Length: 275
Image (cartoon, rainbow, N blue to C red; front, side, top):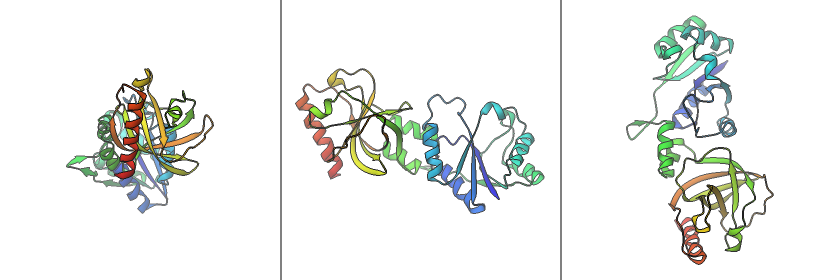
């Protein structure tokens, strides 16, 4: 037997996790049919690699379906498709819509489910502060620098997977060596300094990160630089790392001197260690 879930699944937030939890109660195998890439979404919250990571974290199988392949299916044709995928159960949100023009709803699904031998279970949405948890809300919070609230809605830390790249070596010269991380996605975060956690070779390290253009050194392009607190990690280029964002500390700004910058970085580190 197999439980199936259909949706964009751009973020695997707590609402998505509730669907997964209910699906696991019904069958050991849970498959998520994800509409990917999501229509009308220019900058997904997580990359395909990161979504695969999340699927593994929650012990589900992620199957991507192109929107063009299903957008013209009638509700009944869509259930025929689910039948060919050997779905025993279909777990959906209470406001789920499907079929061409989004004409199908939960009641439609239950009727078709009886016809095709697929039991449809609907799950109420997870709300916070009277508002339904959604990826768009999480993106809104991240763009404002409200990392802690966004992480609460996600149910895990917002993160990025990336690889190490060669930097200019400025951090090392001022006593705060940094690891430059190249990401596949555009980070929807305000330029600033963050409390982060760096994962390298399955080990996690407390760190501070600067995301921005480095105005003190007349930088132009946004870069993500991570300083591991209390340790020097010597890494080769193209080393895979994971950066978890935990807290926004302050906005990025231009300092009048390197000494002034060094003093501020020390304050940033002390804040992470002492709060």
